[in-house]
Length: 68
Image (cartoon, rainbow, N blue to C red; front, side, top):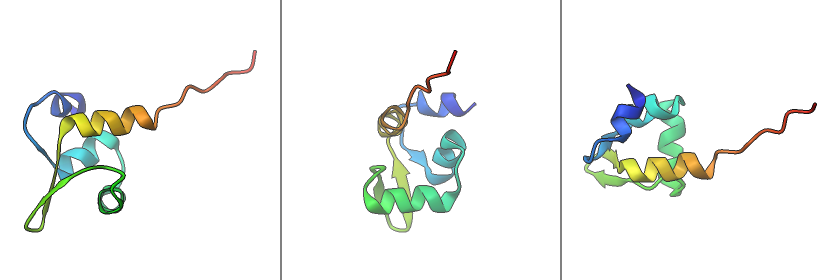
């Protein structure tokens, strides 16, 4: 379900980003306020472009090396 939200063309609600990233609402709000996750603020609502969420995930993905 979470990936389905990213494949839409429309803007995502804060609650949808929380579901995709599996972090708290306050974490997403802090990262949006700092500019780490770009968002559009309309009134009190923060809306997110799916491609920005993809970029955020890609930028924070790292490969762990497993010792043999």
